[in-house]
Image 1 (cartoon, rainbow over the protein chains, first blue to last red):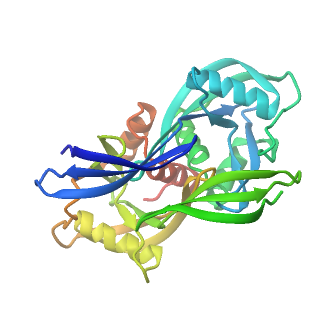
Image 2 (tube, rainbow over the protein chains, first blue to last red):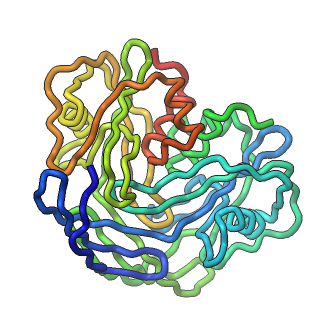
Amino acid sequence: MVWRLLHKRVVYRDRWVEVSWADVRLPDGTGYRYTALRRVPGAAVVAVNDKGDLLLQEEYRYPLGKVILQLPGGLVDPGETPLVTAQRELREETGYEADEWEFLGVVQDNPGLIEGATTVFLARKVRRVTTPRPERTEHLTVRWCPWNQVLAHVREGQIEDRVLLAAVAFLCARGPVV
Amino acid sequence: MVWRLLHKRVVYRDRWVEVSWADVRLPDGTGYRYTALRRVPGAAVVAVNDKGDLLLQEEYRYPLGKVILQLPGGLVDPGETPLVTAQRELREETGYEADEWEFLGVVQDNPGLIEGATTVFLARKVRRVTTPRPERTEHLTVRWCPWNQVLAHVREGQIEDRVLLAAVAFLCARGPVV
């Protein structure tokens, strides 16, 4: 099934994303030009308190022009593992730390267009240790949301972010976390 | 919270995706240059049979260089509604039609980078009406997967596609479909 790469040309690149044309040989022997993107990997955190509430953010996201519900998280800095990124972002964006960390899963932005993975972790035994220090481009608020309310938000169409939806799927498949 | 757009420059565009720089004014009054993408909207189908099994695809996806599990679906053609796209793609990719269609939800590829929505529908009362006619770039197989097996795939890290993970979240929040 594999497509054979004949030639690749990068048509755009900045510090977040690379856009390229790939001239490929399809399995039927014909040629095809495919636009493929890559972005810096990311990590996100499902922080859960003793009641099973989830720590959600509301953040203004420029590409959609609106405020959305999402998880704490961000891009992996050079030299970081996704777990370290998740721990750093939780602290920076929410002021919380956690004693128990567990891998939940990986979600890709869009396998037909972009290589863009986000690794999602479950964080338990959380405590507020500092004041949130978001970057100047981050305009966000944080709140605890009961699990049943998270499911209601999903049902009512209030959650569109792929990472938060994936996290709900990971948690449903995993079973109770408290 | 809104960012004010001062100037936008398209740096790349083809028939699937547009990449642009936006020079914006942040709420604190400072300037910032943001890379934002848009892609053609898509639609996808959770086709369910009388036993509650889901129709899954395995397709080779070039950006990831591997075969992944996903739902039937594709990009919205000019003049189509997402529902019409979902019905067309189900027929083209799997040979199935369905009598009952229901909106499940919308998932965005990555709200921090790209405006790229996929509308997910639930299709019931399905029947095979024709032979699948995938496009020459689509190398896929189709199989029915019991719901418990779908959850096991999620738990074991075999599902990374944001649309299929979102669909699992939509279904968990919605409750039993058969």
